[in-house]
Length: 312
Image 1 (cartoon, rainbow, N blue to C red):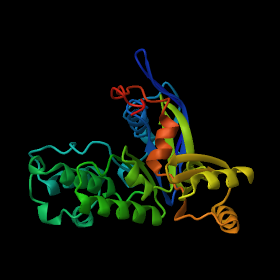
Image 2: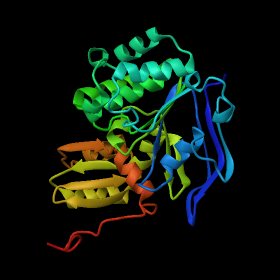
Image 3: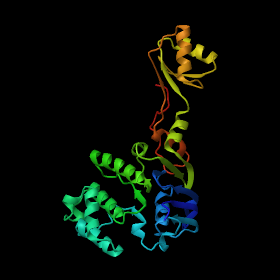
Image 4: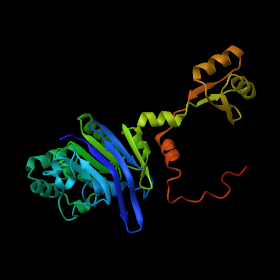
């Protein structure tokens, strides 16, 4: 089976609300694909449709080339964690996974293997109701891994994890992709995806806003900007503007320059004897790029604080 998750022309309506509207994207094997968008963008609906939990009104969602409902051994083909609270609180962690394994025809030894993989071996006989949110996340991830599937889907996997757990899941997701698996991760933590995802699918109001590599998105958001610090701001502005750059003053001793590479800026300033104390190419964060993309797609936005944007 080809390890690819494919969504084509997906549309889903709940009463008068259109949750997903003509959505198309592909999750390729060998990489982590981040799936992001504002609240209400349609991420959860899309993941539910992929897993056969909801039926689409139009379009298709395929895992390994087949609808989820037609998979003969679903747990061995696609693993998912959509809800960390899925385990019954009175059930012990190992028993919860044993029940899943038995239902799918998997050996008990696999349960112990995944508990070890996610760091829960010492808590195997503890009841899920006594788990912290981070431990429940790990248990959900263990369940997704039971069938050693080539495709994996995680909804907010770092939610509730402590710094050590976040560091672990970051490396763990990348290792899964390095094994050739297709990994889809829904998250609102852009800082985590920046260090984890290879590809990004950004949606808003049920539609794809961007479907691109993380590096390409960051490069586009950075927009070739160069930040310069100089004690002779006026002279530097005049010189660079005459040479064809677009220059904006951002502080008493700081400029932002576009349309000219850093090397050329340094050469011009040096040649003309204009001193500078620092120069750096601006590298946009994934959060900056995300906010720029989704600014018009956010359904609920808090009012700006009084006085914001006014001169002070």
